[in-house]
Image (cartoon, rainbow, N blue to C red; front, side, top):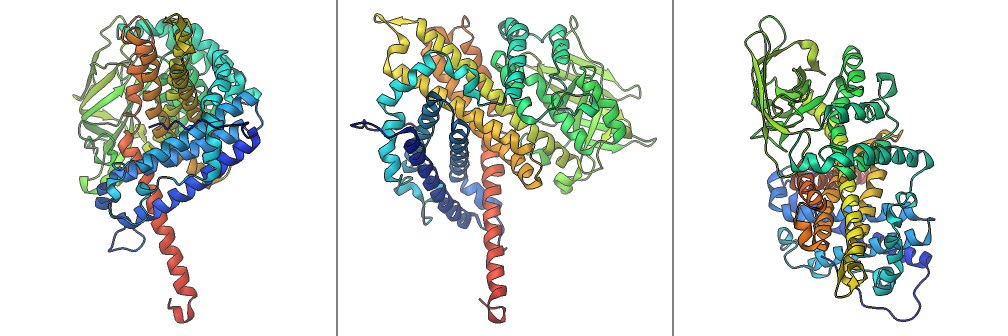
Length: 592
């Protein structure tokens, strides 16, 4: 929900004063979210164990937990954007202020909505009655930041393409060189094929896959010592963004599977496995697909039922059904998560395996495959028709006592869940970058069409309501992009605690960016009118592709409630319990 601030009168504050007011507003909102976190922590606390969270109570307050997660992501992104644009051009600082003000006002409206907090009914300190109680400084600054005059001042930046120019990315010269490399590659190699691949649900051609290997895209998450081109996570995100700008399914998503597999191998693989697999993945000699999801185990990874039994003569026999295995037909190896323990073992009973298979290439049937292990075991798959995200085909795969050697086990027996989560952290930050790329494509298409489309004798982009939509779209792109970069930097930190926070925050930015991708592509489609609903313009593809982003790599609800909110609330309860214990110990006689 967006709130239009009242028009101000007289000259507005300076940019520095405006930024200071917005920082004060962010601090105030953060403090009030802290109060909300305390209230929600009380509501979900386990009455039987001090400092612990009750899972049933968390589910009962799931709606409030979702809003908490989104609010935390929104505020973190706003703070990150202000920091990233500090000292930049006046135009970019205006964009930053606009984005932050719109975020604060929108959050305030969400908090005030009577239906927004049913999970906290009767809980003390619920903010539903008072909203964010924005500071007077923010209320005074809002018209200058995002009112009609601010919209007019910001518009030249969009009209002249400034949001797609290098300064808007706030990159170092080295990172901008990477952006230029992958921008030019995507425009030359991916863009010409994107529409045909999507409209015909075609498999990306081998020539494009080879080009990805040559430019270093397949090894961008693999360290140089293992034959890759990894520099840092920000470089990976930049490359992903540029490729996704031209195609989600045949562009940025091609990097995802090597990203997830390489992180698992780097974390749990033996030296021999790293030597064998990582250089070949980086060169495109091995194409990986991820086989984790099952019909009854999607976001609940610990519920995986595919089993791996020890074979009498050594190795393992894998039996089960996997689904949403993207690129499984063309892949030459599947990374399979299987149960080596009992169901009662939960996550501790899961193990990762590399399962080699013959790749299926055109002109063969690229929508199904079948092979055997030479011992009577079989592996087969069939493609799942999808409305978007096309170029690699997603498969349901069936394993029937399919044999793999113990040398293909990754990590210790029972360590598969932890290794898979390590891979998923990389997949989530990469998915945020994919969302940014799709949003950028939609924004550029909307700006171009609005400039050319004439209505009632004037261009569409001359209408204030359309300009507001376009500026809001640019703001959401900037917020998601800069938060993605900041999380990437945290994941590369020399400090272990900062890296751990980066892994967690990958879920936070994934939540923010993927939901915003739906909104931005929807508005881009709306600005195209009837032509947006046709297949004559690429904007319909962006909208179809964006919809999947909030589903894979951790469904939106699971990330918000069971990853982000649960971690925040669990940490709050543990911190409070530890503080109470210290106070008790410090009291005379050990009594409070």
